[in-house]
Length: 356
Image 1: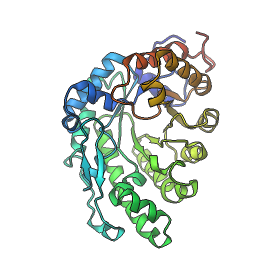
Image 2: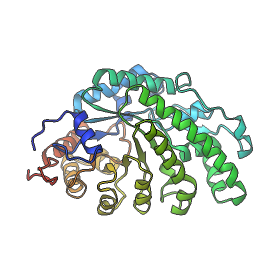
Image 3: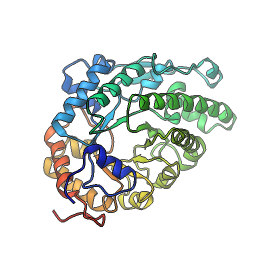
Image 4: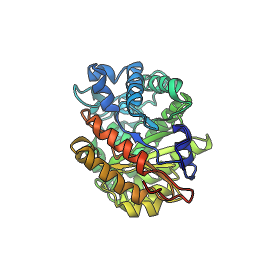
């Protein structure tokens, strides 16, 4: 099949379960755009116009099919009252909870995405990008963290993880998770109201690298599923990100109904392909540090071809880093990722890969 689709058509075809002309490519490059802007990171990550232009500038250079828009993992936490530090050379991070104990849940207030900082700037970024390229490029307006990860920031990571294993705290934990679910839902809706084609959440600490599958099912899975179902009623699709080796829970992740699973290099590729084929799209899974940041173009190309051979047949793949790229990732490595996918990710009429 020849490359005749637009980027928007290509990604839409994959998400509908069809076979596009070739595997689409995305880049999780928001920190790189800050570095390339020349602005101080704290200023850049609180300026919607600057962030939009940063992503558009990167798209003009690399031509990826899907743009991933965000300012890190602390936006909702800050809007809910957490202390956030804007780093001089990285993404913003939380360094103080919004509440000191689960007895203070009633002090939390659901933020209005259209007035709360920095959500309003993130929405501006999405709106500006969609206005410029949304008719030809697929745009993901991230809804930041999912309920589980947001709750951990609101209470503080140590207190949250301790409460997970304390039966006396279960009811209060679920109250906090209910609050967090509503916060995420409202922000997801607002992102889509800017014209984004999909929204997404990150739930990295819910994965097996941090929490047991049992805890995942008790405190995370139901909230992710409910979020998916609520958004689906508004014809909104959700991408669902969990870092680390999520192989043990990938079937459960699929069962949430999420349109896209954002997975990383630690996963067992044949197993995640089997679990998602015909049910969900994989976005990933190239190692962003060892391969894309510190590797060579030749190594990037080799790893991309390995992934294509396993994950591309039958559709259901968007080639991407498995997590955020470092700010100084070599441009040559990203060009190698894109060029390799363009060359070796072409489909034939049966859904297999054409011989390059």
